[in-house]
Image (cartoon, rainbow, N blue to C red; front, side, top):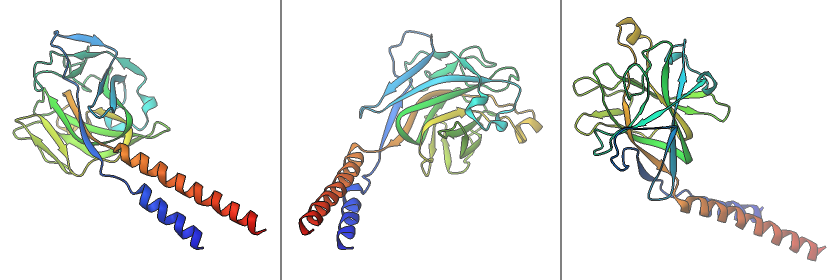
Length: 249
């Protein structure tokens, strides 16, 4: 019993999580070379984490009827817009209803951004631009089986001053949408628009936005080191216990 408690204490000490750091992935931060179409964009933070953003397409069902990544059967082309400033540059999807934006107001072509992190991400903010009064945002976390989990924000992000919905605040001066508290952790995320319910009733279709930057909390490297150290300590205790038992026998 004493040995078990010692091992448990070591796990607690070594595996106690460190404070997650918040990093920004500047998707607009590339040489100003005009508009360029690419299959995907990968950006690294100063701390080494990476995110890759690509476009996904679907049709014939409303955005609020999405339940699984498998429903997005097509891939699109991302356009890198001139990144001379955070508010003028960003990622859009080529060929949609509204040029160079994520857009879902064309029934035969609806768009989304698939965001894949090199580690688990907890969104703290999105930097957006090209926002109109009726533009909307929906954020999903993607489970290992492709199931989409709503992360608690789905609503209008435009308008005069915008709307504060479910902990998100809009700052029209910088185009940054901040999530307080941070959204649930996922390694893969889906960003799209909301065209359903009130938007359909009032003919406010789910037009979109351009994605300029992602801010997310990521695990500190020390967190993983401490966890590994904790498991290593447990293993050492077990080996020592087995040796002691052998000698006693």
